[in-house]
Length: 332
Image 1 (cartoon, rainbow, N blue to C red):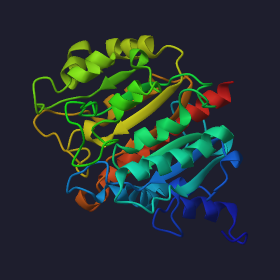
Image 2: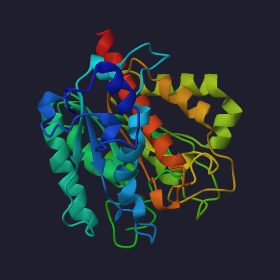
Image 3: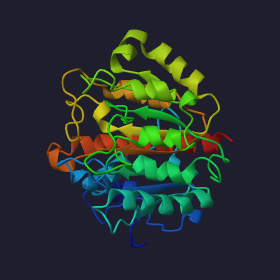
């Protein structure tokens, strides 16, 4: 931006999402993770979903288009994350074999290994939910800097468990959007005994559809159980479960009610999903924990409202995650 623009004009212009070159939250492009505390990353990946709904690779572009409007201070935390941390947009993970899910997952892992080595904490926008596997392979478990070589814990928001070992692949994809929550535990990267999957709803495809999560050791809180427990008991459960484990937050937009987020893959319309205030309260309940990163996935811009409602909410969740990281950094 030209230095001729004064501070008042700059503040006005930077909040206009339709003005100038779009980056995530109007942050500078920074390809070097060693220059960042929080690395914002786009992961334009669709082939881990394995269905005809492949437009999830357009998610990063959609959020870049509108997220300048979400560059805010955090009222509840009383912080300005953009000033307290070095935050930059690292661009998109290069995926030249975009139609080869397994190769793409390894490309993601290579990309995020550099972020982990630098000690930056990634907050990513997908892409389908297979991206979480590629990210965690780089930043958790033996040799990972962000977890200190430990397994990570998941706080996983979703309408589905994505631990569906009952099927060997998802239309050809093995490290797919349907499998990551299982193989990451089997690989020794995620500690299911410290993890919570929350928001599952709808009629599953088989009666044992959620069984793998229980067998692996996850605490599963379907939306019905959340309503029965209520927010306070659910929050207590989450905090007790996670404890002091290094925490990764993965947020599938289909956990939201379709009236809130219509532009997602794999809609579940038979049972009401989360409302905005509910998930914001649940996200903020892990304030102060060692959050190593997070992602927001399954945005389908081609099915969103013309006002880009789902993209705006995706940006809001990214802002919450990066603010949790910034708040924790500031308090140390």
